[in-house]
Length: 70
Image (cartoon, rainbow, N blue to C red; front, side, top):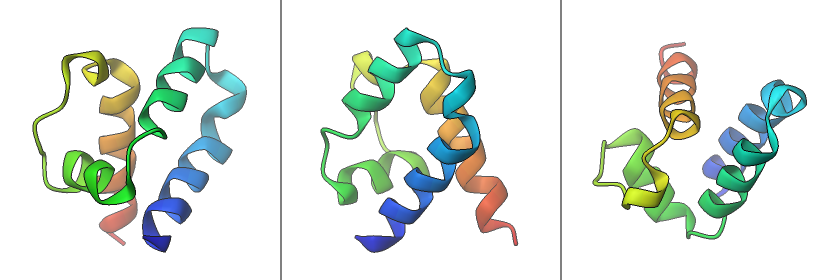
């Protein structure tokens, strides 16, 4: 899903310099999942695994909403 690659790339590009080591590890974990699964979580408010219920995922969801409102 090319759109997810672009979205995740833009999110990381804008914020990666401010990520803590923990947030980088969280982002790496998110990226282990297939794009359609990630899309379900962030665009359709799918049920997240407990390990992905953190502020970084919340930030990614908010970022997605801000991008899609244009």
